[in-house]
Image (cartoon, rainbow, N blue to C red; front, side, top):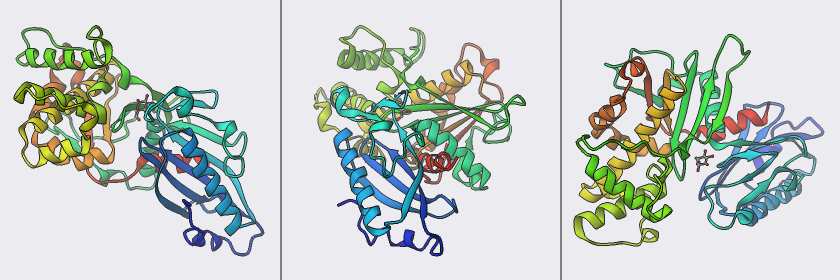
Length: 371
Ligand code: BGC
């Protein structure tokens, strides 16, 4: 059983005098499982976070949801769920999503809002958000409650003056986890409140350098290796093919093969282990991690210049965990970022990296579940 009655005890105290306990449910669905937050719909400051629970497909997720609904009913018979929001990876269309961070055939990784258990997902009041869309709302929520600044540090301050993290025009939020997500926060005098636009820009194909670039040879070899793996060597890979958990594993496979002529099956490589090996000085792991971040910064550059953003937020707990490495290769990333065919377009773009952990996705999902 996922949620134990004891775990749900605090909810019963939320408003003892009332007849009903009105709840909102916020769920962040990641590659390895779900994070569930139960919120008091009357006093949105009150909420309960249940731990991480494994779910890597439709059936597993539905049984967690059923279990949660049943346990809530058993412990708090008078509860009513007013609304719910779920953060999911992948494009959402008409209340349906095929999650990109679960493995298997599309039908075993599809969620449909109207097919979720109604007891916690009320019809017409259950919202799917793209995970980065949720993350962007989380940034807005953190800003509203005055806790945003301490979670980020501006990179390359000698290149861009200090300014607002969420700019008054366009800000892109990027996160590299099991996938590469990007969302846009648009502010304008024409809008009453900031508009969040989910995007699928992590799936753009990588703009590769030309022959005279100093590391072009290595880049071509890496890109070819990735293309061989996914596209029969014919098409240019997408940013996410290198800048994601699976991307780091494939980059590690490439450098291991190049350095030691050893081919490790990619299924036997773990992204967390590669990052850890880099920390202990393993050369191959460091090379893989460097290209993983270099391509990430290249995607940030493409997003900022094409969508004319003046602020870029590199978010996610991975960014915090690997902060030591981001600092160690700050010059490489700087050169990658500012190496652009229209250098004047790069002036003044502020880049922020997350330095303190906080799950912005669940924060934003909570924020939107109550709207
Ligand atoms: C998905 C995006 C998602 C990103 C981060 C990508 O594979 O297509 O929708 O935002 O991963 O999870």
